[in-house]
Image (cartoon, rainbow, N blue to C red; front, side, top):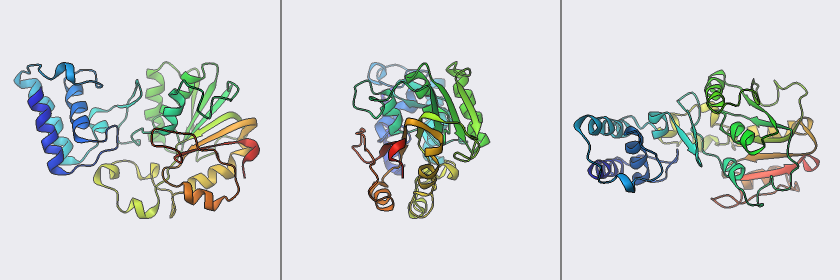
Length: 287
């Protein structure tokens, strides 16, 4: 296997492919593809480096490495999986590849997340659910909660439905077709989380091929990347119960958001990339 892994790293570095859909470098990307092509766990390649491979298994893994370069398709789509911590989710090109700092916060056990002081929510909304990953993680984090998973895309909801079923959560996670809050009638929640589109127009024009494989609907958010976030902030109060909390991921748009909403008391929880990528705001402080 070592030779196959070395081949993948060389090919990836020579081709200058882009990462960010589950890995950040050529070695991790090649290891993920090779391990999964061989039916092995994805998280540690070292125990398998000296495994001998027959021609059929070698050829199947090499073909995936070659497709990664030739088609510039993210590994998550080639393998039809994405991982958030220890949790695996089915993905294909109908949904954005899950990569959320909110997932980190939902998985965090220490008392340093925006959820630490929150009364256990009875109703949770995952807005712009995509593959359903945040709705599922919220249901696992808050086992007494009912969770609505909303998205405007029927195709995304079909993928989310598969993931919800895989985790046996169909009785607690309800899928809703909704353009942000529009399809939710007067339902109110104790917690709303959202990883909405937040890529600004100038950045959309420069996306590498891997990112252009993802649904544009899940990425683009107007000239400054805040079109969806503004709408969420306008509508959230009506869908949060007293004492409720809104948590939204906004990429690198913190300065633009604070300029657009001066004086609003956003909190910025720490993530693996630092502060400024996710904000939390109680219902009572919403603009």
